[in-house]
Image (cartoon, rainbow over all chains, first blue to last red; front, top):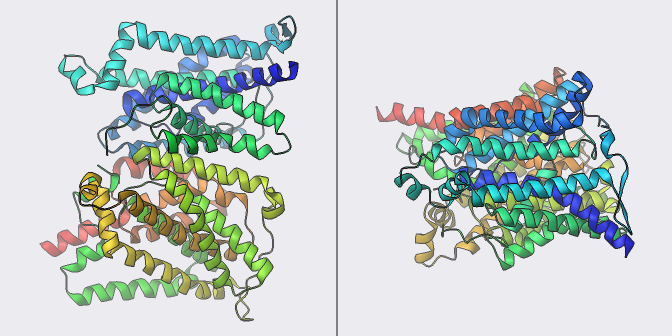
Length: 293
Length: 331
């Protein structure tokens, strides 16, 4: 039982990363109809940025958690203005291709400057111990990651569901023409929403720095898993992305620990689940059916 | 509206069609010129680079068959290129058959793999199709990495024999000419598919799926068949690639490989078929030149080039050339 709780906890923590990334991807898709291939690269930039702030400027984790997402959000907004926006009226595939090119550029820029070796990043001193939950001890940093991600997801949900800004974004997502007809400047919200989604990827990157190996390719394969996660949850569905993120995290962790003689099960489970969802509910578990093509 | 349709609204689908109104002699002259360049290629380039161009040309044309003529962007075609590379290598190692037979076997395995993946993937269109194919390809990558007994894991598949009735093909220069017929056959097949009634239906589905369905065409089945055929052609390329390098690595299955083929297609021109050949030649040559000059961040250049192409040069090389030629002829 204790082992089961341990695996479940680990699954929720890795699910937290998937959820944060899937959430950012979904928010961007909802507003812009752009699937951001570079999401994993921005996550990587978040982790690398955190590492560089410490090694080059001595800026600690807590400041990085504030500065890096803001900086990446600003960078994301610049990317939206200069690269994504010119393709807005074309088939969304063009922006998918564009962000693919951007992924290669960002990865290789970091590689060129800092090499491909992984860099260790110490756990922040306030979070080095374990947290005692009565029967179980969990590493304090992981408890922090999980709570932070849950708070972030709830905050985004609240922001979208209960504020005026969120209402506008939802309206613009669901009925762009009607929203425009009501005299709301939808275009104004596109750039900030893109930046916000990138900032979420940045948050995931900062949180990953003390836990995972920091290197230019750390987001490369992760982004594919996140794609599968949003297909499962339903692309554009905020709740679906978060739920599928945590769910896949759990499935992978259970697979890794209970079927450890077949590591392939844990690695491919997300894709098998995606295949099953495609057969059973092509729009995703929480997605709405698209208009017939 | 699909990617190809948007571009197509402004120009004819291929250079051949652009030339269709031109004197018959010009058409044959162009074909002859292309053949002459193909035959001369290993004399002007490193033969090994020329062979790589052949393999990637098949891959790019296969991707364009789906993207340009069916309106489906597969971002997971490395699954078929790589699977065929491994299957070809294994057949060559264990059966010792002539290399074209091994390549054919590899391509058939790739097509067999494409059937279930395509069956699931064609349920989605547009961006979803791209993401789903990408995800399935990644699954194949993990499986290959895991089945070390079969694929050699991260060491790859070593010393693949290159056998053709006892001929000495160790020199890439001779292997180029041995591989050329297979490549031309694959390209001819792609051309036949595009210009067959089946291909016309595909274009109809691309441009207006609802109408195609209303006319009674089983849209999913057409798309699935196109997907399997495209995987077969990509598999021909992948099998030859295994033969050309005489080893197979996991890289052949990675999503960056799928992406590279897509870059070639967009660079050459979506929906132009031969543009993919041009794109392959350019990109392979560029990457060879970069690695030769010791520049390691190849992705920086190809990615940057790709961004520029997508932003301002969406017709690609072939599309632009066709447009210029058409204007000249219509004047």
